[in-house]
Amino acid sequence: MSSAISKQTLTIAGLVVNVFSQSDAATPADPVAVLFLLHGRLSNAEAVEPVARAILDDVHERRKASAPGQKADDLIVVTFDQRNHGTRLVDERANWHWDGTEKNNVRHAIDMYAIQTGTSRDVSFLIDFLPAYLFPHDERTVGQWLVSGISLGGHASWITLRNEPRVRLGIPIIGCPDFLRLMSARAVENGLAVAPPYFPASLLAYVRAHDPAAAPHTGREGNPFWGKRVLVLCGAEDTLVPWKAGEAFVNELNVGEGEAGGVKEVWVEDGTGHRCSEGMVKRAAEFVWKYALVR
Image (cartoon, rainbow, N blue to C red; front, side, top):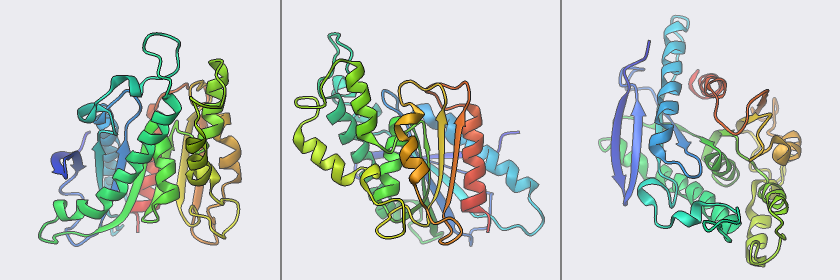
């Protein structure tokens, strides 16, 4: 049975933000965990609303089934349109890819990285200001910031995990942490060189300095993922964002399991292509419940 979920729409410095919550989930004194749920390329915030509701429904059922006295924080799910998508759309071509047609986007790699980087910065911006909009009388406090995203949103989730220390849990879904490995293979498939105008030197320099795969990630020193809880969800038959593009990085990734409280789980779903499956959503909800909400 679905739980009673409320949807509130806020405008924060011109950014339309949707907030999904269950008003009677926990007591007002309990802190709140906020999960940013980021949509994919050529999509919008409205398209991931069913996922937001499914996660909240799953958490609701787990809360009902939990042992008497079990403490679990409230969960709020937040969606918004990525840059140049939905209500923020300015140029349709900038969201397109290399395909040799009249819609062909020469700047595909540039636009992709600019959008996902901008979306990650939007997450940080909202962490700064969202609490004041949600709780203007200081009614509640936000105890944890979480991020998940699908496809382009999955890429942005990885960037957020790398660059935003306040986000301690992330669930990239059919996303990739290694932009150059992913996009170099895509360029080759389209008969393009990893060179200007498709990959200007300035872009390559930025990616090599700021990409998740470029960060120290095998040990503790300088590792921005250290102590974080990460669930990686991919489709084994995904040809657009193949698991092999991020596999080496994910296998090497050290989040300090045991030593620093980090958690790393990986699920590559057999028979699934480039889509967010029902099984992925259930695993995401379970991960949030277990590693963010339960106290």
